[in-house]
Length: 114
Image 1 (cartoon, one colour):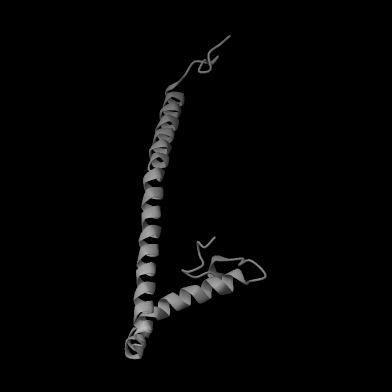
Image 2 (cartoon, helix red, strand yellow; image 1 turned 120 degrees about the horizontal axis):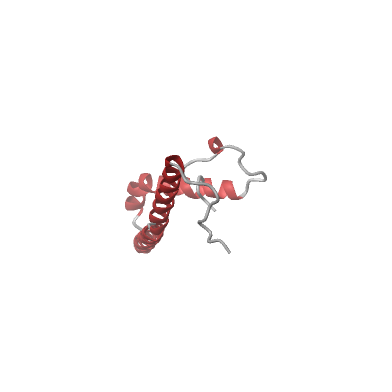
């Protein structure tokens, strides 16, 4: 039985270069896929940070609501507009009957939404 790397023809320099290039590509791919764990950990940290920030913001809003602080609510309303837009965009996306056919039909809020 012949080993896997055995070939019936003599190797020339081009064949050797091709083998070296394939090995280099495989090594690079392995290095890239090895860093995906780090990328996933970083992504989870970002999501946790967003959750914590939104929870704290909700607590602050509830505290101010209990105090009936209308002036504060009016003053921060501009800051909340982007969150309202995100929620509205995602709700519209969920309620769509057909899926968007192009990237143009997406925006930052729905581009990677699952």
